[in-house]
Image (cartoon, rainbow, N blue to C red; front, side, top):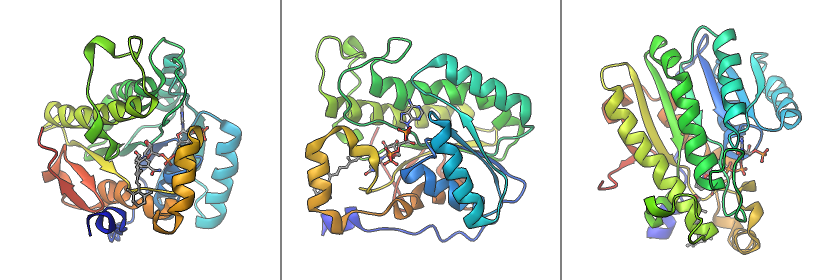
Length: 273
Ligand SMILES: NC(=O)C1=CN([C@@H]2O[C@H](COP(=O)(O)OP(=O)(O)OC[C@H]3O[C@@H](n4cnc5c(N)ncnc54)[C@H](OP(=O)(O)O)[C@@H]3O)[C@@H](O)[C@H]2O)C=CC1
Ligand SMILES: CC1=C(/C=C/C(C)=C/C=C/C(C)=C/C=O)C(C)(C)CCC1
């Protein structure tokens, strides 16, 4: 029953329409991010697809425009493994947009071989946490000016195996690709909780989510995970199902009271820290 519950799919039942709202989704050219962006465009928002591969992003933007009839789907370059790229994205965005109502920190890498970002951070912590940390920091004033506004951090349940090893944050003393992912996903949740605390009263609220186990390109670096996903493909969620929890946190009215919480499906879960 636990496994069935873990794999079952919730649905974002909110019927809220968001014309005039401005949204940024990172890693929106595929997987959960693409489906999240599509639904937000469907509801009328101006949606920025923040992608490291602009060509892939443009193809997806066209697809979303055609499917939703919303032409306000824009692609901007964002490589979260390079702080110069993050700063350039934020600078461009702040120059062209007056508002930012929803920031979805969705992009992620899992189980990649040991490598470092342009600034020398281990890739998982660098992209999944530090990259989004900097991006959020650079966009925070705009989010405050646009309040009520929301930040959704796409984490996982993998955080349960995560630990913050301050003496080995960059994985230089020991490294395990699976655990490095788990540590970065724990960092997403801790960041969400602390940000919520600091932003109290500002009108900006923040949530972390576990999207479920979803058929996406996230498993690209692990043949074992590819095999597992293939074996159990019947139980695994589609990206559209995987987007539901992010959409729930972005759209549901009255969720402000759960500022800082972690969500699985459409339930807030107490992580006990
Ligand atoms: N799939 C699952 O079962 C689960 C997923 N998650 C989380 O969901 C989120 C979305 O992942 P999912 O859709 O599954 O995976 P995908 O691999 O399908 O999508 C990941 C996205 O992140 C982008 N990305 C990776 N590195 C960077 C970077 N350096 N800069 C900018 N963008 C980058 C990818 O771009 P590109 O296409 O160019 O590589 C892609 O658009 C992740 O945070 C993941 O940890 C959590 C739990 C389970
Ligand atoms: C236990 C179990 C499974 C494994 C689930 C795993 C391994 C989930 C991994 C989640 C990840 C990678 C989260 C990303 O953040 C399957 C294959 C679904 C089949 C049913 C039983």
